[in-house]
Length: 518
Ligand code: ADP
Ligand code: ZN
Image (tube, rainbow, N blue to C red; front, side, top):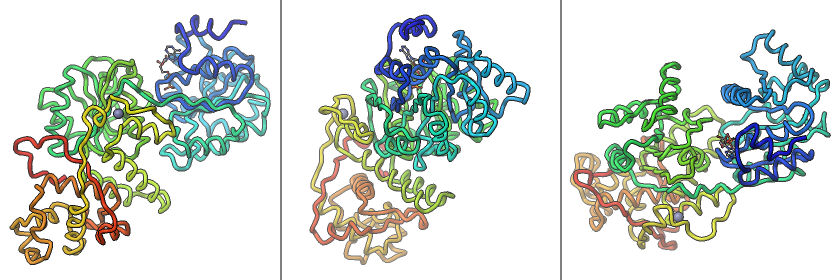
């Protein structure tokens, strides 16, 4: 029998195992159950492909993504591995042929969609076929709280109940502590050995900037990445179109990608991104799943992503070759209002909405934090990073902070005095004593808070409001176009019982962009 290392060379053409691959392969080949948490691009596939080749019988891989299934099988066949898949894209005759091969022991790996696997026909087939192992890919799909919840994943416990002697390996790149627990519980893998790789991507430099003039900021950022491949993520299809047009107008080779586009154009754009050098893909999060392009030099978010996990996944597409790459995020208060609106008007149930809002808040906390970005990100995945990283904006250019207690009180009381009906822009005008049409229409020049904030400029106030929202001291009412409201937490600040420190703006306001309201 060949050894794992020999197969790694001979079949896959790699010289050495990466990270914990060797231990995982050994453990599963020996018949043990495993739960593998490894970041995207870490090399999860080999962890079940090699044991499937080393053990007798066929490795059965449960995978939720039909498109990826086909790619994987295609790639394996080119390496000479006897691989096949069973899913709804096969006609009856093709499916019957795959079943025959499985029973005849002519397959090394069989990829199956979960709903297919759980059908009586397939279960029956497994009873009669030689099976080397069960691999459950994208295991986080079992979690109701993740973005990719698949109810059928819950029923995969049948694999263990019906064939307890066959080893199981569950794999995922989404691994915050609650999800880990849920996977182990739901898939009956409490006793499985856990292999948790570091989620750190040391070659990625994280930066967060405040949106002021988003388009110009993006162009400035891109000027440091001329001729390089990268991805720009935007919040909506419309934003994708607009940003792509602006980049093209600025002479950048940008292409749009979103689910609303014609499928063939979308596929063509994806192909160009993968094959040509220096294409900038402007996309919604519909883009990226299964994209394995090693030399993506940057991932830029021109709008706020939905959660820290999402942000980590999306930025993880940069720098897979290990060379330096940048993760750049530009966000403003307007983004928060948009996202909250999207969540609240969505179809999800109340509990789910609350959860999504909490996730958004955690991300906001990350954005406004003055601590090492890498430490915050890894901390979210339950991983400690010793010391500051030296490769994020907060490490490279430590933000100054200032005592914002007084400013916070002024801001909160002005929100209160104006009736908790207005967005930050108007409240800032009142604080600064601006004589606007809106101020006089509502008679706000007679308020006690009118003009009490002349000591700060509009940009500084905008930063104060953003941080108050991030800290949960104000909330944006989406029913009323982002009108700011006090929260229960704001009372102690108003009463002078709680002091606050704010992050000082580091970026210098540039010409013409001073009236930033975002
Ligand atoms: P994941 O599923 O964790 O995102 P993959 O299994 O798709 O990752 O692997 C990502 C890339 O890394 C693939 O291109 C794969 O060929 C490569 N790879 C995996 N293991 C090794 C290794 N030991 N040596 C070299 N390249 C590897
Ligand atoms: Zn850092």
